[in-house]
Image 1 (cartoon, one colour):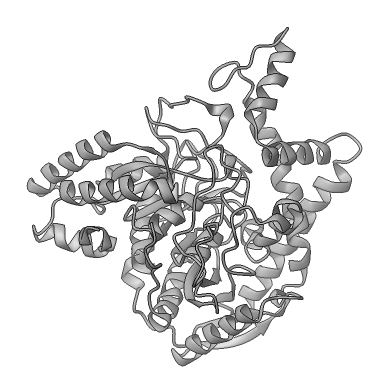
Image 2 (tube, one colour; image 1 turned 60 degrees about the vertical axis):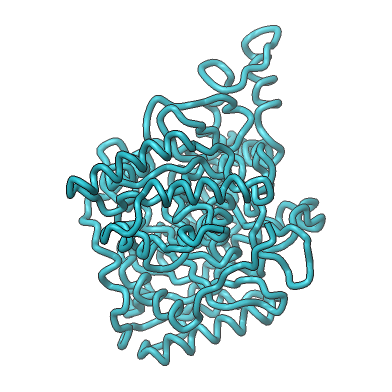
Length: 493
């Protein structure tokens, strides 16, 4: 393994800026690592080697002319949900077979404008619907971590499982991801990486394949808090093409790292102590509280009484929006087409063959809750619950709380093909129990590695912040990271 791929984004940036490293050399090192590891990890569904080398050469030329951008020469992996012009963009679904867009998403455009290099497209749950990366048409991505003394494959979480696996296995310097109900934070926690879902509206959604438009938000997965801060600075922007993006200055998130958290008020919500929660999760939570107290933060108990309704409300709102967004995949204009005896039959045959079981389940749930006679009972009521969840957070923040500390996941990574989860979708949905509230309220949340469980698997803590106050999250997450140390999987691939 080349030592070059061990460099963080911050370290690679420093090496290139002083002329000790070229983007071409770094890119070649990552492409070699992908070639060796991807058959085992399955993090990439498409590797853009020629494009990566061309981008790296152009980057080195810009640096030689003194025109280096904020991410100049840094090789990144891109979740298959982001539109990348002329390159594989299929949301890891059969229904989008062969689709290569003629446009570039705003987030990836921002990254290329800052000099980043694209290594390829990363695996994910089909249309971002899943918590384990097992619903992908291209098969599951595999977690680089394993239980001590076991060779069993574990999931990397989802839906951004390929992004998290690639970062943890050092198959890219960092990765883009999206989060609709925890799809950045949960896989980050299960792979020992850092993932931040910014405030809804901080990053443009334009050019990203839609799942649930009022919940989706792009963000980075990175090896450490500093790299996540560097990536989010480049990804975030206002965008005329996305009316939900917010016109606010994007701070220099990296500049706040190492700043004091003395006097910060950290809320601990009692409702997140779920019945049957694993003891190691509670222990980790208490350790995180102690670290923040030692750093000078004030810890207070808070109440978020509508938390218990968040998961059922989410699984009404998200499928309802998905059933509407996925109606466009009909076999007429692009992607898969299965012939039928007439156009209606062609629609039906194409959608039946093109969508996987989980996507079909959510489309049917969404169509049901939006149908006449059920709209008020389900969808309207779920939106009212969403308002109450948002109000719970507002009351806590108005009472002076600066950030909220919770677990990120109810457990460490579980086995690929776990029968108890495969046979009971609700059990799989419970993987998002600590994360969905953040999306329902449109708030920023970050997952940061905080320890290992008794099996030697990583566990993460989550910090939730005020709207557009990602800076406080980065500052507090950095404190936890410094106290916990860094975690890397043992290489088996």
